[in-house]
Amino acid sequence: MLLNIKYFGLLSEITGCHEEAIDFNGSTLYELMDLVFEKYPELERKDFQLAHNNEIVSGDMKLINNEIAFLPPFSGG
Amino acid sequence: MNRYSRHIQLSEVGSKGQDQISNAKVLVVGAGGLGCPVLQYLVAAGVGTLGIIDFDVVEESNLQRQVLFGTSSLGANKAIAAKKRLEDLNPTITIIAYQARLTSTNALELFKDYDLIVDGTDNFATRYLINDASILCDKPFVYGAIYKFEGQVSVFNYNNGPSYRCLFPTLPNVTSAINCSEIGVLGVLPGIIGTMMANEVLKMILGFEQVLSGKLLCYSSRTAETTILKINKVQSNFDTTLIQKELALDQYEDDFCGDPNMEISSEDLVQLGDVQFIDVREHHELPKFELENCVQIPLATLNKNIDKLDLTKPLVVFCQTGIRSLKAVEQLRQRNTNTSFSLKGGVQTLIEELNIKT
Image (tube, rainbow over all chains, first blue to last red; front, side, top):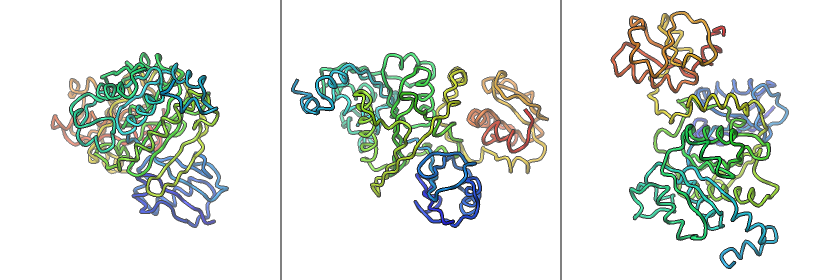
């Protein structure tokens, strides 16, 4: 399945893009994370939350929608 | 009342709504990039009692975005300088300036005098402190944060809604804490995000229904794109006993700007072989576990107990999250002890990665 992945904040600096399509054959977000970490090893050391279909979820969530966001915490003010 | 006539003309506000605004008490933590626009609009709107807490002073590099201040404020405390400017904007309200840092010892006392809190700070530690103290005082708070061209806004702990910990459960680890060096920001971004925060404050005061609770608004000033993500409440994040313990332990230390070479990951740890572990947590902190070559020396007593360490081995320090252990490594290195590292991720790394039994 072709997923649309969004990266926010400093994560987009690591990936070099704010959004990309990734072909994914697994079922859970954990599996997707592994795939993304393989592509961008530096991401693994960053804090972030995942959103699936615009809802914050945990990694064991089964993928049913193709829109995923990687969201880091921001501290600036 | 001429000053508020444009509010009163709105059927959704009216005289009753303006009275609600006049009776409201709001505390703004941080009078910086976000705090300035929040304060300006809340003062102009006539919020009856407004507290401002900030320990910092106005610097020239602030003026590009902290529009409450002028060149004449340079060097002045931000809370005091803001109050001075705001009293001219609206002399009919009460403005209280606290020239202090928000800490786990003053937060509860301070929060209880206000209806709601605004988080305009610039570091993770104070954001978690505001969240936890708000839960203990049962006060909602408006959250805003920025990074370069992006901003986040939400309302937490409102009408039984989620907290900041339901979004990001724990303080980020040190390597991902990005506020160590000065990061650039286009001056209008905190203006936009801070103005959205002020809007949420007024919506809550006026009892509007669609407050940004349970939702995180993400805004990009480059694309003008707005994404709203749903946040679900996780009840365990409201465990007040846990939070009380954290407050008592003063876990909300300032973000620590670590040298990456001071930290060690679980993979690198395995490479080190035989090491001397140092647990710098307090004796009552959980979880406890059996670990070979490990001594427990709370951070505050580390310098007095160097003789308890096997200095022939590399030293690996850990604590709950990896912040205190970094401070410990800094101390150890100042004493020129042999190789020492802070274990990234703290106790969780030991338990999860190294299969240590609790």
